[in-house]
Length: 199
Image (spheres, rainbow, N blue to C red):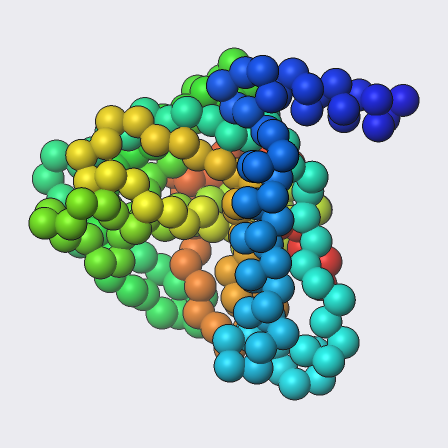
């Protein structure tokens, strides 16, 4: 019954704006495979040598069209550099570039987007969104997760794809310093998409 329901949901998804099709699933899997390679490469892994040997892969929610949403991008009219708190009592400088506003389950939510290398001359901006949701400490990392992607510099809309949400490296190694999601980036909804956490 469950498999039938999943198949039906995917069929419906393929016929709406969110479109989860074979090409999407392949692209998502390739992305996750690339992350796996980073974890088993001693030069890029947050794991120690013994952990790499016993590494069995990261765990994820199944791809879910519900968590691919169209978001309105509301740019900050006066860009300000802020010191974003990180773990280990550190802070790093980011530019608060705008607000992403989106609808999920008939409720309106907002997330603040930051950039660590913002330039008005660039065609696109690499933004990072540290966020928490109702899965944290249950099926996902208690300290929150991240979304990171590029957006056109003068975009008015973009796609938020929570299937690409990932855990910061400090979830695997306390020696890493990771951004602490600001209060305004707490989503009062369960985001059952992206990377899970199994310490």
